[in-house]
Length: 126
Image (tube, rainbow, N blue to C red):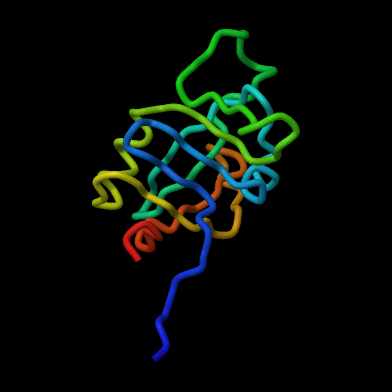
């Protein structure tokens, strides 16, 4: 008997408590650095993750959506924003977590580099 298991790891994870985890691949594609502020944009049914403000462009105060390495020396990043998580959970029709794969990065004129999130494939529900 063969059991099909989804072994795909999520690229970006949104949790009900407001925690957002970003894998190293997505962080590298966005050129994400300590203190950058992330946000979400929607256009024609697509949801994009992008850097709203670079740390060098903002003051040193903590802001919602500000990213930090998940541990010292790591390229995986973590952020905290209950507002962004609530929006993403609503889009994915999920209650506790949205564990999402990411698409190919795009250069969106109004956003810069943006990563499309595949909201129809919530790995938490598979």
